[in-house]
Image (cartoon, rainbow, N blue to C red; front, top):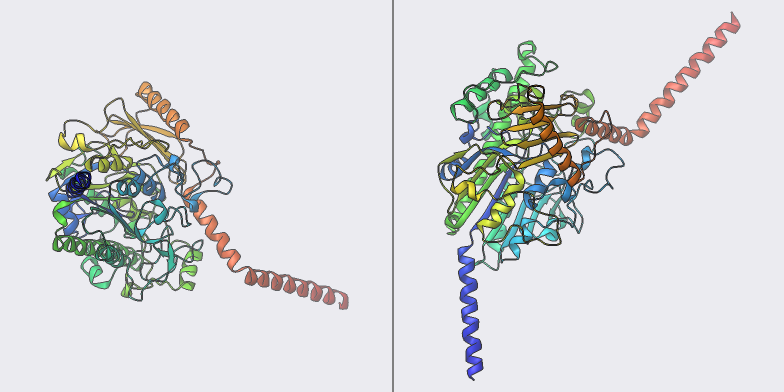
Length: 586
């Protein structure tokens, strides 16, 4: 009897301790925006109205020197593992990878079994784990969310898709597939990506049996990835905002960045690429088209923020908000893909049910795209954009807000996307490095810096390497070496002092050869340690996507092309025969 009583007491104590630990652990929400530059949110100086995200920024910390990969999947892999993308198996996008590389270590394009996700780590200490939105880290039984630590999931398996219906956005990806809890599903009739990702997440909460446990929500938006689409009511306020063109927008954001202290007052802006279109040389129809697509872009951001507000309101109503930490960031800089510049691409879009009617801008079927010129303007005050390791391609916004997070703070200390997992793990009291048998977590916790802004995240002796699709960079102290791939880059290494020259306008390689060689040697060591593989000469990320899309178009139209070829041969044969006949009779 005494033993039974003792066991009862121990069970009560254990239950109380477990309940106390559960109550002490904060909920974690990651909101991941797609293709958003550093200054797109209102709180970072952008034109779009994002009051809910802005409130999180005002109540928490804004990071203006945070870096991701220049493309989506490597960033997502690093975001949820804390490990360098090459070690996760997602060194590049499958869509951008040349044939023959997919079997190389680190280049499979899906999460490998060498890494654990933050969801798996949090489940170990009793968290409910949810994911909704774009996944693009694999879509088989070993790589879909249920196998990677998520209890509930509603995800897009592809790199991008239409925001209203289940169809792709590229000739090489004409279809798109969504999955719920690892099973293929059809989309509801009234689907809109930002709306449904939030509604699905709320649904996970509502159906959760263990309501007492803390939760981790990863919401990965399609906003603002092409095709740019948003309901009309969100687009209309911005129809006149961008009519002055990309040069004006670039300099407005550059000026704003100085006013906000994001860049020093003495910083200079980089020149537009000479091959880019000039706004003043466009026809009025072209200007209207570009300005309208930018209006849809801002509207898409506002729509996303509106639904974020719905989720925040839900958490408040359920008494969950005050114990929640929010992380808001983007996977890379603005997308400069020329989705409308090719006659073949336009024809494919038309055949696939897309249109470019600005009177129906943003609505179902509309294919909006920023284009390279406006992408560079959105990336201002920095150089380059998505696909490149210039600062415009990799410097993205970061907000951390919520329980026990310092409020009203802005920091310009360098940090990297792999730092988020160790930060979250430290916030919940779990040792970041305790992942034996798995690839190492390569990031650092941001908490020491958040508690004391005088302490940098990385000291002068610590560097961070980055490589995707033959574009590379290495950061150390105030300096950065960078190599941007073709077509806009030249595959040469440059050295910049980002503290004084964040726009990367003054190459210091010749002036500071020792510093250049130091960082280059550091990069070479990094590349060797993670298994970087150089692509073949002439490779470009955009070019590979274009090549695969063209192959897809040709294969889908093989019968028509063969018929046309036979017709031309027959016509030629008939012409020769007639010519020979006429020659004989004469």
